[in-house]
Image (cartoon, rainbow, N blue to C red):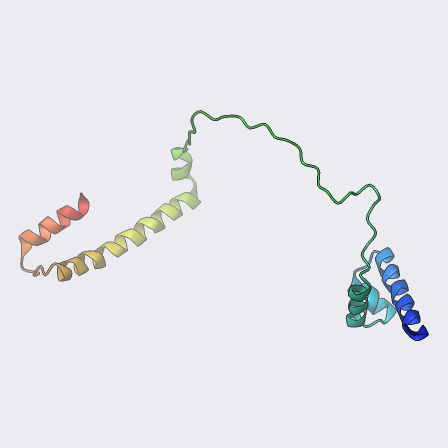
Amino acid sequence: MTIKSSENKEKWKLHINSQLSSGQTQIQWCEEQSVNIHSFRYWKNRLQIKPEQSKESTGFVAIKPVTLQKVSKMRIRIDWNMIFTQKSWVVVIAMSCSVLWGSAFPVIKTSYVEMEIASTNLAAIIVLQEWDFL
């Protein structure tokens, strides 16, 4: 390793440690110090300098045991009064009904074509419509 190379490494170590201790982001520090951000990141990765961790940190996460209780029955309660009195729910229900009602007509007409029911065969049309409601 040449003297210039070791001086360069030391210079970048000082820059990186200065940024870490400043509390600024890399971009803020580099702009303030007129240092090229790309060079800064290159040297930080090359030298593998990371912020110092507290000495208490072991690198492990503490896990606390949890006691699970057995649930015998699950019940879901729906407050129907709330659903039919809040505007947002009423709008959602109305739009859903509109979409479903609007899709029924094309489905019925397609069924006539697929089942080869003539538009004059009233008995077959009534049977098909009754079948749809079952």
